[in-house]
Amino acid sequence: MSGVRRLHQFIIGAAPGDAITDQALTLRRWLREAGFDSEVFAESIHPQLAGVVRSYTEYRARQSGELVVLHHSIGSDLVDELLERDVRFILMYHNITPPEFFEPFDPGLAAQVRRGRQQVERLRDRTILGLADSPFNEADLRRAGYFRTGVLPIVLDPDRYDLEPNPQLLTRYRIGGPVLLFVGRLVPHKRQEDLVRLLYCYHRIDPRARLLLVGDPWVPAYADWLRDIVDDVGLGNRVCFLGHVSQRDLVTCYRLADVYVSMSEHEGFGKPLIESMYLGVPVVAYAAGAVPATLGGAGVLFRYKRFEALAELVDLIVRDSGLRMRLVERQRERVREFLEPRVRARWQKLMSGLF
Image (cartoon, rainbow, N blue to C red; front, side, top):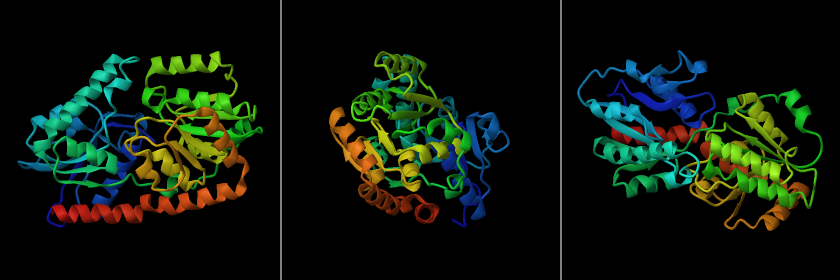
């Protein structure tokens, strides 16, 4: 790595708490500690990150064929702009959701993800290494014709999770009864409506149960439809839409949760899974996409959405302290694979192979 002294990164949108943004900032720190001139550039930047992340329009290459790191997850003008420049890529591929999920709710977004998939094809011949954050995503790159690939997982920074919970939030939601949690944008492929179906069945076992949904309403039409479902089944006071929350409030939600449940049908990695494992929340997840590989034998996977049976399973985990302890212990062993020492060692090995 000592032969290269400049390696900048590009992301589509920089936002606090965003997994790709956090990964890029972590990699920037590693690069700088290794002696590189390294910045993170983005197409859109949240005001809280002004001065931390720079606009991609400020980037100027110093030499022909300059190497840059591109984090790719959706179609964007940024990618087209970089393809017009004389640069080569280390592609950090975070998966692109199939457009079919978005078509019924947001055709414009469906077109954007199709554009992103087309850009994966265009990037191939200029990419010297395609890195994915899961084996599932690496397989995507292989199918797209990328031959030199590797896996670099999302890294979890304990300092962002070893926080004191928000006492006001604890008081608001710790009012008796089991708490189910899901963290993720309100988007069709996350299938939050199936979490509502699960809660409906679980209420026959314990009517005190509630569901916390943390995440932006990224597809408004889907979010509105989801709220209508909640009202139609009479769970309006038991499904809590928290939207985007601060890091402290996110940690508080994990502290409140008895079980983390995912019904998502397309996950490229699933950072909330490793957050749950680190914070000691038992995970029950639908075995879609990268979820089985991310859990790596920890948590509880299911392959069929039989809601009444799943409600009984969740209730067993809530009530059986011995089972909970065994699940949590296995998850804590697994999450070590995503802490900085092991992920950084893998990054250094990948980079030494390049330079």
